[in-house]
Image 1 (cartoon, one colour):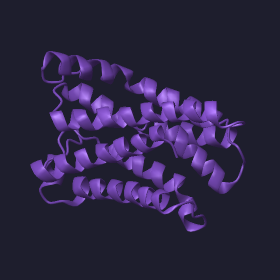
Image 2 (cartoon, helix red, strand yellow):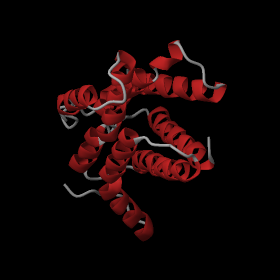
Image 3 (cartoon, helix red, strand yellow):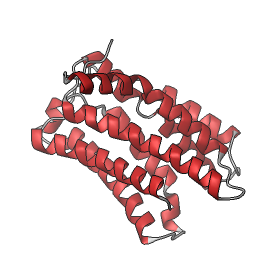
Length: 215
């Protein structure tokens, strides 16, 4: 654990809290991609299988359970809540996630640290997380006008990954023999996916304007 990872985790947690706040306070999930939320749940479930056979720390276990539980909660709101579910725009949220899931699984089976069930699924989760935000970004581009809380949610998600890049650099410099090429490359790809959004988010913040993304 180091300060970059800790603040990365807290930023990730804040992004989820912001999204839950938006949904609960406004009773609306307008502008939120259900497909991205389902992909994140798949990421967490396949990554945290070690909950069944390994204990690292109370902090580690609690964060894993929070990420799985909060993702399930968001999906429940969007699918089952009698008011919130009516605001979900399925006609706009049409990204074909099979083109993200299938290549991620294929790549995980070909490039991994060890060809075992749990290791392949863990690697799959790393690859899938790198692109899981794409349905959300596409939805925001289609709707163009982005509400403040949804914009903050996406920005915090990107910020979490950027902080994790600093965490990896710090560990590389301070831990002899530390190498995680799969995680590093996937993290760089994931951060790059956010770059366009970061530009328009910071531009709108600087000009004190409502965030709008080009179609």
